[in-house]
Amino acid sequence: MKGIQFNFAVAFATIGFLFFLLPPDAIAENHTCYITSTDPNFFFNVYDVMPAGNRVNLIWRGKIKEGQRALIKTRYGRFYYDYIVDTDSQTAPLSGVVLLCNNGELISVP
Image (tube, rainbow, N blue to C red; front, side):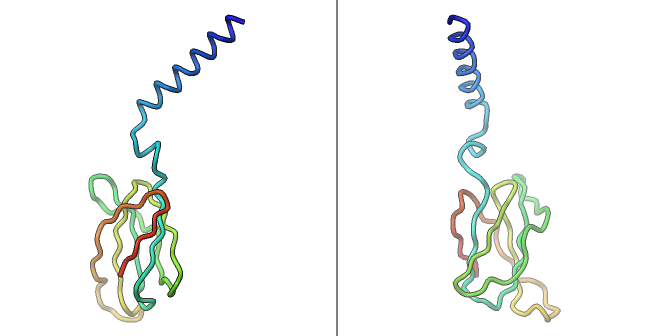
């Protein structure tokens, strides 16, 4: 019986210790969100953003129809987007901003 109690105490202490080692965002946040658009004619490019602020891989692109939303899954909990009004035009994308993306929140972009 003492062996079971000891094993339970060791397991509990290990879990408690690991809880304090993990960064808070690893515990509480899942780095997903949804975006909606105010204009269904915008075509979006969404990029993952590293903690240092660098854009990395393209994680989503497309249009968002009125009343719909797009699921964004980021690795670092932030994303950058740019957009164009007409996908057939040769104009450069309009700049967006870096936004936080956590816990399935709904974010409105232009």
